[in-house]
Length: 219
Image 1 (tube, helix red, strand yellow):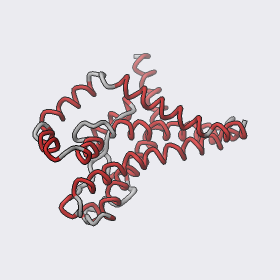
Image 2 (cartoon, helix red, strand yellow):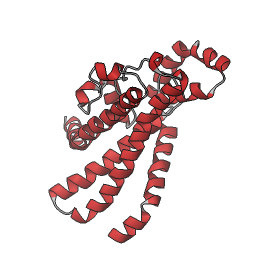
Image 3 (cartoon, rainbow, N blue to C red):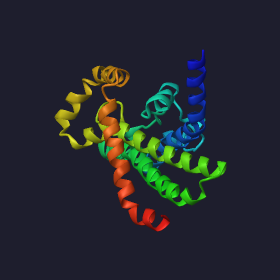
């Protein structure tokens, strides 16, 4: 019983950082998908109330659980109708890239804010703020890395489709029904964990390198 209590306590302690970080990250990701599609001429997301930062409009239960437990996950996809785009494949690629790109930008600013708040640590508010910001950065990088995998239905697949010759594009589309179950299998067996963690760590390290002058100034 003590082990269960300890695990539950640890989960709840992490949840005060993870839950708001996940809510913000998913909302920004999906809002940027919808807004990009809207600017390209597709009103679908706006008409369904998805151009919002309200996390309840975007959070997918299974994807949120994966983010909580694994650090990688997904949101409820924003509806996009490529028929509104002047160039359908290019429009889908830009719309798909907007979410991960927004997450990387948010991660960079979160790391910047984390460094700036380090002098405030030593009290409960400062400790929570710095802890939350580093978790927010990590979640956003993880979300961007995972969604950029070129596997349907992730964002990376839409970008890949835009780069392929038309014949290869339609050939890949015919295999989508088989690829999606494979993605879930790879995810839940943990086979994707090591490469995803490596990529997340590399990107976080690169961002911290760029921020080294600020770190030196604060230090």
